[in-house]
Image (tube, rainbow, N blue to C red; front, side, top):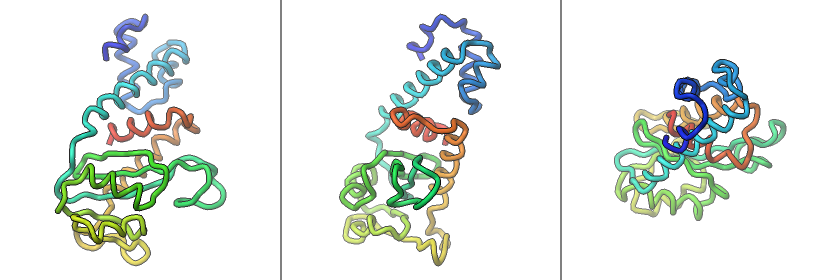
Amino acid sequence: MGAVRKSQLSKSKQDRLIEHFVAGATARYAAYLVRVNPKTAVYYFHRLREIIAYQLEQEADAVFSGEIEVDESYFGGKRKGQRGRGAAGKVPVFNLKRGGKVCTKIIADASSATLYPIIECKVVPGYIVYSDSWRGYNVLNVSDFKLFRINHSKLFTDKKNHINGIENFWNQAKRHMRKFNGVPRQHFGLFLKECEWRF
């Protein structure tokens, strides 16, 4: 927080901006409530997101063990037309979830060649991985992981075999980002890490 506190804002206004950030307010609404210039609040919130992303990056080497959910989702792009995998203009994001903790990563595509190295790096071999039926996870069938798959078209949950927790994260992240009426693409990674931190 040190870099943020070098601001010319009074400590009380900084504290109030942090409170509104934590509460999920937009920077412009927080600026109105705290009575500061909107550009000041936008910059301040941007710095908070940078700090969050930096802190999460320090924990990036931590591996997950136990029962892990994996899934990918797509953000942005045009609302009309194709959705999900293959939709034009959308940013693909991969996510691993263990208990209440998630780890997100922006990816180029959802192929096995992209997904498997991330899973191999983040998940302890021999543990259970839950996924949907996407072919990008086929490689896990012949790996050191125990793969359980959920076919959403037939059954969303099957006793303990589920990816409901990770779907909950996607819903929460997309709901939070909708408040901003579009996130600048160059800052999308920071907003994504904010959602990871909030979860």
